[in-house]
Length: 142
Image (cartoon, rainbow, N blue to C red; front, side, top):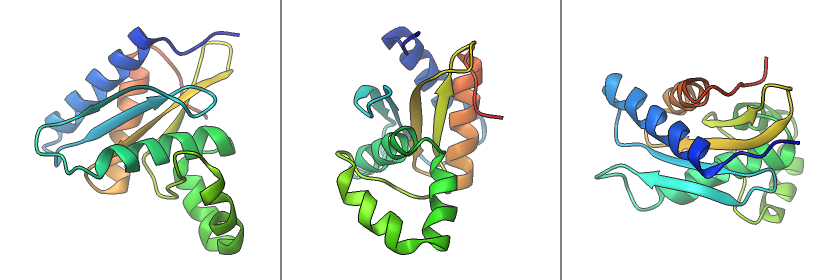
């Protein structure tokens, strides 16, 4: 089983932030976590609000711990709000059920971590996360 390395995490972050700049988005914060939801790397753009690291990490760790993107967690929250409400406090770094948390897969299709982005709209956060993952030569689900 492969692991998500610090070098890969940093490459994901650099490409994610570059995509945000290219799109003219608000300042982004990017968190990359391992399969246990523990932080590997995090960067906060200049002028990114202080809460953004916690939100980005909650998106990423929630996605990897639940095994689905944070977008899917948002859909689950609408369908089964009591379940997501009960599970969220169990996650050490929270669980943020909106788009922007994307699971990272290796070449063999194994989940090796997740990326969480916070700062702009949730849809734009997700676009940047996907761009960062693919730019680093890794895969997303689907």
